Length: 77
Image 1 (tube, rainbow, N blue to C red):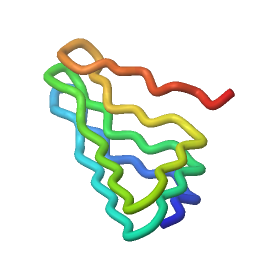
Image 2: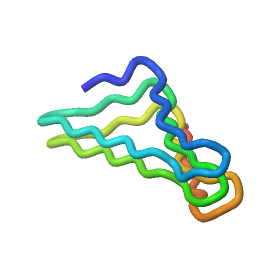
Image 3: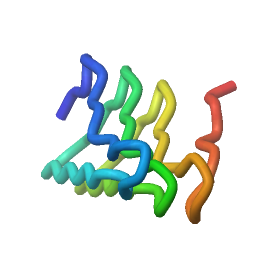
């Protein structure tokens, strides 16, 4: 599976974040930002499950503006 365009599943200013789930039999390659951030209440979730490799080349964001959930994704070296 190739993610070659940004994905936005964010919640509003007073809502929770969205959910992004991807599953592939072999590989998942993420080349663009995947955003599931939330507002005041909670961040979202991003789940990437592959039979072999998951390669992330851009940001994964599921944080919130002031509630729970803030995990920065590592940047490739």
